[in-house]
Amino acid sequence: MHGTLLYEAYKGSLAKRFSSIEMVESSLRETMQGLHGTYLAAASFVSGALPNIVSACLITLDEANVANVIELFTHPLYRARGLATTELAAGMNWLIKNKVERLRAEIQSSDDVSRRLFAKIGLKENSQLVDLFAG
Picture 1 (cartoon, rainbow, N blue to C red):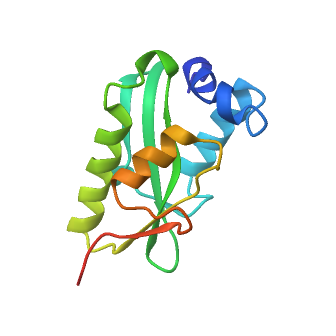
Picture 2: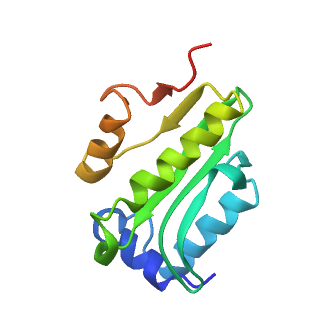
């Protein structure tokens, strides 16, 4: 996977986490290989086509049947178009249909864009879990 656009998407707010294109690509490979929980390809969405991935929402499932948003990013030139919102909503719809009741996301306190997005879906500021399915 070519990571230039992916790295540029992360560069501003997460440069300490990903200091190179190779680190971004490695993290995405690890996620898709199941090293961060079972990768849910059917609940994960990507906008663009290789090598020009401009936005993605990657979701995994842990042993406690809690879904985790492992990666959520949009390249700066493609922000404010609803890509992340659409990808996240599609992922959540798949989770609900498949009776996954909880979604977790780690959001850095400095990431205002992600905080606003997750607030729209009901994620509380001091909580990392969102109940998806009242069952």
